[in-house]
Image 1 (cartoon, rainbow, N blue to C red):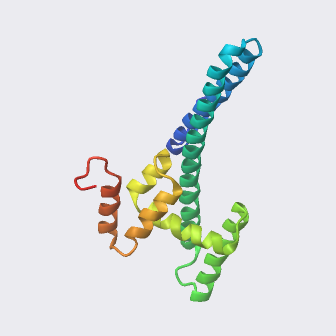
Image 2 (image 1 turned 30 degrees about the horizontal axis):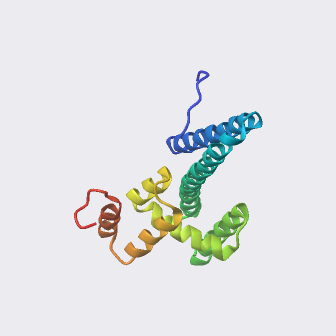
Image 3 (image 1 turned 135 degrees about the vertical axis):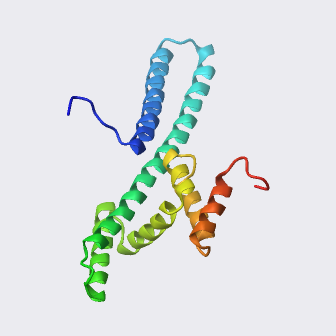
Length: 178
């Protein structure tokens, strides 16, 4: 296979965000080292830059949170899909329900959340992942999980093509009548 490392496309954005965060931490270290020898007049500029670094980090941390939540949403959705695919076609309703409940319980354990919270997350994740433009915006970090959930909730009563079209319209910066 060779020595090259293959990185999944969704992880590239996460790595880029982490690299930007790391650069800000390194800048903060350099500023702290510079402040040790600085005179009193440079203190205000240094404090202002430290403040700006913190704000930039908050933005990147929010972006990273959205990106990793997109990965969690996709994986939770796929766990349930895989569990359903493993359930024999002739399985009883009781067996199908048991398999689904078991999957929700396992996801709850992995995410260290309650079963109810896991069930709600999976439902929301399925809605978000079914809207390609919403999932894409979440995975790039340009939309928060809260924003993605709101769009999914607002389009829930629509048939799938209409929901996709409305979500695309919400997220299109060039859409008429935004």
